[in-house]
Image (cartoon, rainbow, N blue to C red; front, side, top):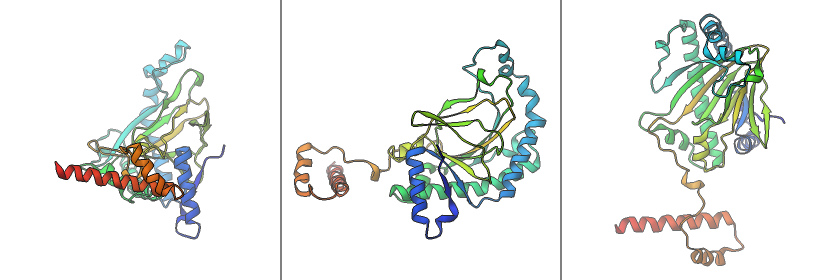
Length: 309
């Protein structure tokens, strides 16, 4: 099963319409895909990966292998309540805490800040393209996510260490992501990430040529009224090598209220006899026009009721 790859360089030329179709299908039928030629500085991406791996070796590796999770391996039984990962979280928006985290080198802090600055622009661009494909205002996702302080952005930096008994534990247990758009800078050598599609687990290959892996979270599924999907995924523990994962979450702020975009809702609160009356006049016309007309009629009635109150 070949994972969709979206070439962002083709959004500015004659292939734009085809590329937009590919993006829509990836969001609708997969819930995950890769993007290339995204405009993020490749040197910065490589620097972040290098410095993150160094940080793990110096500051995290020893404590992980001495942790309760690692010691549980001695029981030789499947571990259901733990994940085989060494991780920390960084907030970027609305306020950054990167300078408050102990052990992060100045070089890593600087490289991460530069990378995230570019990545946020990519996330916002992606949100606008999704809105365009959904037929809603291009700023709908950003505005819905903003709440009182703007969208929140944070990064889970993780290493899935070499595991002596990968059959006894997951790197990360099965889940969907709670938030919005997830942009993953992942290992270019070690696999392990898997997504569930059509009843099967799809193995996600390591990201070559600085591709960024994207998946959509629960809030995109809600806002799109189920058109776009939040896909179940997991990370398998691996016996050979450490897998690096730098997942950045473009999410609603805490007080944002996410609802389906009204344009994507089907008509509701329409009595069947009223529907039949309108249907008899539009039976041989476009169903989409009929649905939209009924929605407009229903909205008009609601406004009248509100005005009367």
